[in-house]
Amino acid sequence: MRVSELPDYLRHHWPELKAQLLSGRYRPSPVRRVSILKPGGGERLLGIQMVVDRFIQQAMMQVLQAL
Image (cartoon, rainbow, N blue to C red; front, side, top):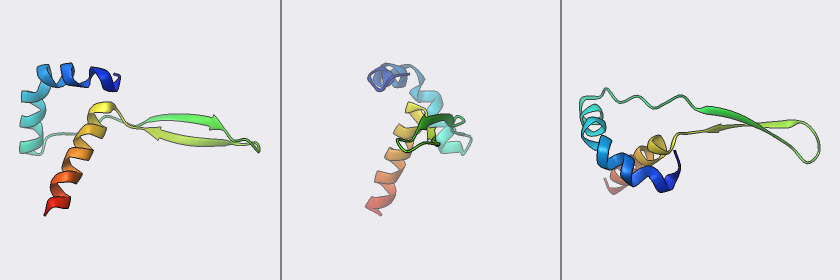
């Protein structure tokens, strides 16, 4: 999913996501592993989170920082 698709996704799935978060049942999706080549040779492994997981992580960070 692209970031631009997140608002529509949340409109349809927010009740279930909210219930999972409040009950402690929410589990992030597995991180997608991607390798990119380094300029000097070798490769660098990256872990890319799903858009929804990044959104939830940022929202939780904002709540916790306010405490």
